[in-house]
Length: 273
Ligand SMILES: [Zn+2]
Ligand SMILES: [Zn+2]
Image (cartoon, rainbow, N blue to C red; front, side, top):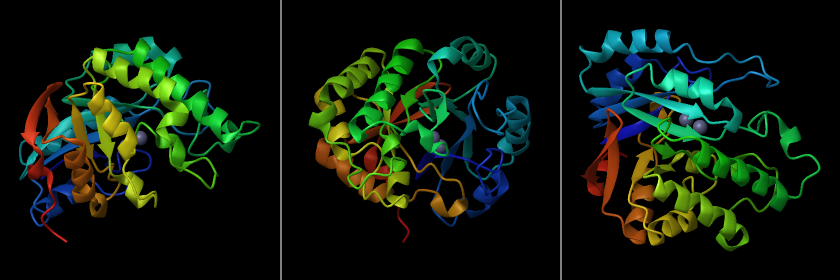
């Protein structure tokens, strides 16, 4: 089994170390991990967090690369922001990444996971629209800086609304535009199983969005746990695979040197309890 969305304690919110993951990989039947530390640019944002030092990350990664008992890859999760293009591009072209997830964390200059003022004064519909409009702007702005869009409906984790799930029809116009732009740019859609750990009962994005990506011609799906500790590795992969098979996918992509390789979906099934 392979997991391509994994944070170590090099990320500000990661708990387990690279060596912790490598130690448990054998027991868990994991034969490949792509580390995807957080890279967010905080200029002008209300936070004490610091942008990832990629030289340090690469140095740590290289310490384990040769001796690792399983294959490991050098990835990144970039928190895309439309006005950070030049800095992001300049960083990406200088490092030998295998895989880059583009995500929305800071949206409209607010870190939506911690700054609830993002939602102040907006209805649920309007807050979700602000988020999706910025996702679309990111996809139009960025190109070589990402391979797949991560946890596309991440916003549902943080709005304090009773009804969390995205109803596709309610956001059809903007979501279709998002998915069509991803497909046009040959970008993938990440199925991120952390949604289950957040009690949402589905991955990010939900089944309706995955189904629509397929209907519109989307071919590149990746599966990642978004692990922040060893226990999260490969979590809920089987549930996500059930959804993907139902929607009609029998292969998922795994990236090396920024190129997707297609692998039979059953190889991503988790074999342990
Ligand atoms: Zn993320
Ligand atoms: Zn992540």
